[in-house]
Image (cartoon, rainbow, N blue to C red; front, side, top):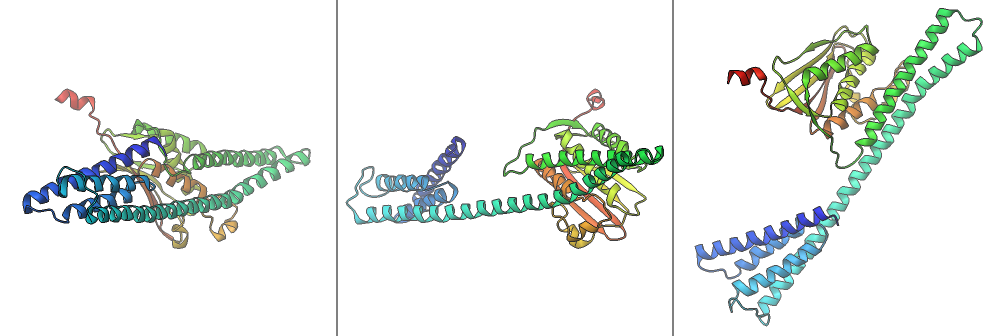
Length: 358
């Protein structure tokens, strides 16, 4: 048992027993009697302890402490132990039974939840492996084909044709490199409890970095941006969030057929900063929208015109946003376009101008 868990369980037991003791005294002052009430209240404390602690130890300890407390302070003779009375022995046996039954039930429930989470993670790994096998095969085949064509027909190929094949191979290699980055992020976030190292990041600087990175890869795809006028600082891992925004923009550039407008919009909603990437392309079907962030590869993806799948990139986006304590969602209409947005908590930072005014 971890030390932190041990301390937590100890505090739960002590808190439950203290509340029970205070409740019994309060009832006694109001009603003037505690016949049978003390045992019921402490039995509830034993139940709560067994419910919210791990294993059987704390429930048994709580039941023993409750029996001693009730016997010593709330049963005659007061402030003396007397275990010869049948009701005292009965109350102790009842509390012990309650603790054992409750601990058994909660332990089984926790094991079922853990098994369910393990099953879900295995499904995610299987889906990711399925998506990876498809997404990696296509660019590798293209690279191999381009290199083989150039090496085997070097003398007969024209310079322009050879350069075109090599450029295509370079593009596929760059995409493979980004895929590896995404897979590394998936392995980093494939756990129950994930923490990211957040540092205050200026919104404008983040967006500038993302746009420069995106324009290098897609110089012919303009991006319209809408940013708040106020100075906004967001606690985040800037490298990971920039990867999220880059993935969203790249997915639109690659998959949004017929797109004429790509927009990156950021606005504040209370204490949250909302990031939205939208396009006016072909849209996403409803059946595909349901599994957009799970890494599941649709059955018809193999016939997707040789394009790289979007499953891995968006599953990484969802994992990163979730690790930051945010949420991500998508809206789409076939033939009208797609909007994907996520939110992060912001920090309230005063600018130098505001400080000067004060």
